Length: 552
Ligand code: SF4
Image (cartoon, rainbow, N blue to C red):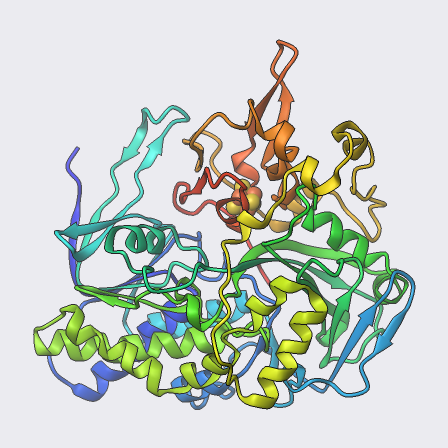
C-alpha cells in the first residue's frame, strides 16, 4: 500500500500547552507578517485535544498573558483564582502547619485549572486561527535525511496483536516539514530517539523524574473554600523518598487531590499508588474527603531534573519544547507556563528560519538564545541543583532548597543527579532478610471503596480505552522478568505501574510469566523510566487510544 506524504513548513508534534502555544504564536506572527502563509500542522495522539493532559494544576498566567492578553475575556477555563496557601508536614496521625508559607509555595496571582480543559480551549483558539490540528495521530518515528530532521512518520492503523494487517489496515503517513517542533511531553519517545541519534544529551545530566497520581473528588459543599491550595510533605513517604501532595479546592465542592513520588526511590517494593491511597486515610485528608465521591483518576510522570537536564534544544530541521525538554520548576511545582513560553520562543525562531530559507541548527539556535535570555533561564537556573539535593533525603534537600532561595542559586559546583532507576536496590540489599517475609508483609492498602480504591478501579475512572486488537505498545526487551527479576527486585513493575498493566501470572509449569495488560495503560511513562534493568520502552499505541482526562 502506498504511504501518503504531506509537506508543511512547520510541523508541531504534540497538542499540549507547549505545542498549542507554538501553533498560536505562529498564527499570530503570520497574521502580523502578512506574507505568503506558512503551512502549519499540529499532530496530537489523543482522540481529542486535552484527552491526555493531566496536571495538578496551578497556572502561573505570565506566559498565557503574553500569548493571549485577553484570555479571560476569551473564556479561558480558569476554575478559580488562588485565594490562600498552606503547607503542612504530616506524621502518621497529626499535621503541623508551617507558620510561613515558603515563597515557592505562594500562589497569589495564580489560578487553579484543569490542564485538560485548558488544552481543549487552546486547541479551539488554534483551529480558529486556521491551523490544521490532527487528533488521533501519534507520530511513531522521526524521519531523517542524514543528521537533518525532515519530519515524522505517523503510526500505522489496523494491525492485529501479531503485527499482521487487518482489513482496515492503513499505513502511517510521512509528514515532511522544514522545521519540526517536538512537544511530545515528558519522556517523549521521539525526543528519546532524537537524543540517542543526534547525541543531544552528551553534555547534560541524566533526566530526573517523578510520578504524579491524581484524583478528582466531589465533596460536600463548604468542606474547603474555593481557591484554597494545600501542599503536604511527610507521611506516608519516608525520609529517603522525595515527594509530597497537593489539594486544590475549586467551586462546587470539586477537589483536585494528588500525590507526587520521585522516581528514584530505593525500596524495590515501594508502590506509589499504595502510598497515595494510604495518604488519603490520614485523619486530615480523610476529613476533607469523607462523604465525597471519586470522579476521575490518572497518573503521569513529570520531569523534575531542571535546567541541567535539558537536552540540546536545536538541530538541523528541529526544536524541542515543553516537558520533552524538561522545562519544569520542581521547586515551584510548576511547568505549564514554561511549556507555553518555550513554545512561543520556538515558534518565533521557526518562523524566522522558514522565512529566511535557512532551517539549519545554527539559525534554529536562536531558540536557545531566547531561552537563555528570557524568563525560562531566569527561573530555572537558580534552582538547578534543588531536585538533585533531595537525592540525599528530605532534610538535606529542604535545607538546600532554603539555601538556593537565599543565595539565588550561587553554589561552587553543580550537584550531579543519577538516573532514578539506578538507585533502586536489590531486595536482599534493601531488606537484608528473607524475601518471602518481605512479600508476605506487602505494603498494599486494602481498598475500602469509599476513600481508597484499587488500581483497576482507578483505570476505570481514567476513562482509558484502547483497541484490544493491536500490537502491545510496551516493549520489554529481554526475559529478565521470568529469570532474575523476581529474585533480585521482586517484580517492581507490578508495583510502580499505577494501572495494573504488568502482572506476573502462573505459567502453567510451576513458574511465572509476565502478562502485559496494555489496554489499561494511562500513558504515564513510569515503566520507561523506573524499570531497574532499563528494558521497558513505551511507544504510542494506535491513534486515539489512551486515557480520557476530562476535567483533569
Ligand atoms: Fe504507565 Fe507504563 Fe503502566 Fe502505561 S504501562 S500506565 S506507561 S507504568
